[in-house]
Image (cartoon, rainbow, N blue to C red):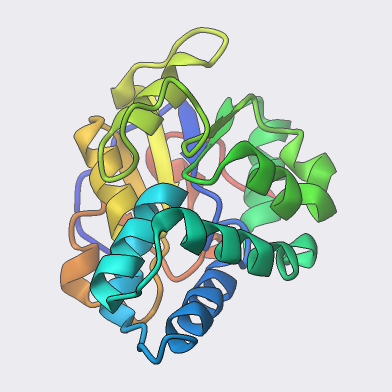
Length: 231
């Protein structure tokens, strides 16, 4: 955990993949299989550069870094097909449901800010539709016209904050992320950010987060002025 000053917040903004849903390993496996079909490796450092970016940007990075002889359009066609076969039954990650239900029960406004497109969000959340219906709203970076630039740009979080019933100030928002790109985006938006990183990430890649946790189960709401857990 980082030793940074924690400020009181009133609103929460959540990333989805690798934070709420156990999908990042599927994305990594699919991209590795595509790269392998051309005899190319998919290094873990490239994986970490891709995490949190839009679908289009992810394809561009993978193609360039892995030197794949296909266009982003062709990559995304294969990627989408392979993901659709695997993403209809994904599990929630540790602590996710408890935290979301706690915030909802205590009337703390929260929303989703994911780099995925709207159709992919529908697919991935299908098994947990009731839980994801608790969100105030969802911003899907790959398909939302108001999100001009994807993470690590701050756009998605600023758009997310503006869509609460009463728009929230950046300083009142707490972002939950798993990727370095997402943390950079939250910082650029002027928001605090709790990071639950891939355990393979170096400490250097997580040092820009306000707080670093092993899982959402370790989050203590009262540290940010939110109602504490009672269970």
